[in-house]
Length: 194
Image 1 (spheres, helix red, strand yellow):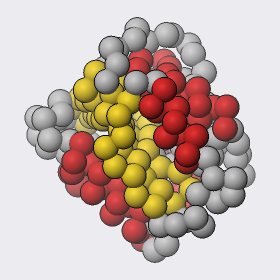
Image 2 (spheres, rainbow, N blue to C red; image 1 turned 90 degrees about the horizontal axis):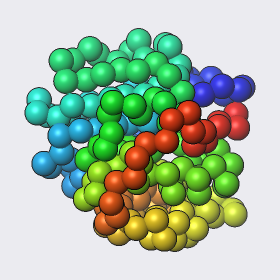
Image 3 (cartoon, rainbow, N blue to C red; image 1 turned 90 degrees about the vertical axis):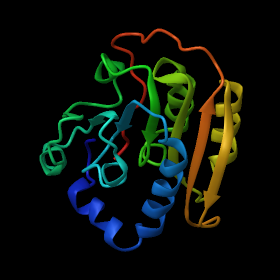
C-alpha cells in the first residue's frame, strides 16, 4: 500500500466508524472458517479481523506491505506474517490453495479493472470449495453488482452479502465451485491507487 493514505491511522477507524464492518467481516468468517486448514488474508493490516477467530489447527498467512502494521501482528506458531505486496501473485507462493481468503479493504482502493482482474484470479489462490470474504464501499457508482457478477462468472457461488446501505460498506461471502488453477508467478493482480 503506497500513496498519500496513512494506513496506520486509517486502521484506527475500526475502533469507531468501521466497527460495524469489522463485526460483519467476523460474522462472515464464523461461517467460512469451520473446517479450514489454510487461510490467507491479503492486505491484512494488523490482522484484527482474523486473529480472534484463528484456531490452532489453522495455518494462516497475513500479507501486508506496511512494516508498522506487520510489526503489530502477534507472532503465533500457526501464523506467518509476510511483509510484502499482496498485489503480486508472488506473495501467495507456498500458501495456496487456501480454504479461506480474505480480500478486505482492497476493492475500494484499486481500479475497477483491477477489482475484476483480482476476482478472476482467485481460482489461483482459493481451493475448490474454499471461501472468499471481501469488502467494498457502495458509493456511486456502486461496483458491488459487478463484483458479484464477476464472482459468479468465475465459478463462485454467493453465500451471503450484507451492506450498510448505498452510502456505506458491504461484505460478501462466496464459495468456489471451480477447480484450482496454477498460481502464475510474478503476475500483477492489483495496484493501490492511494
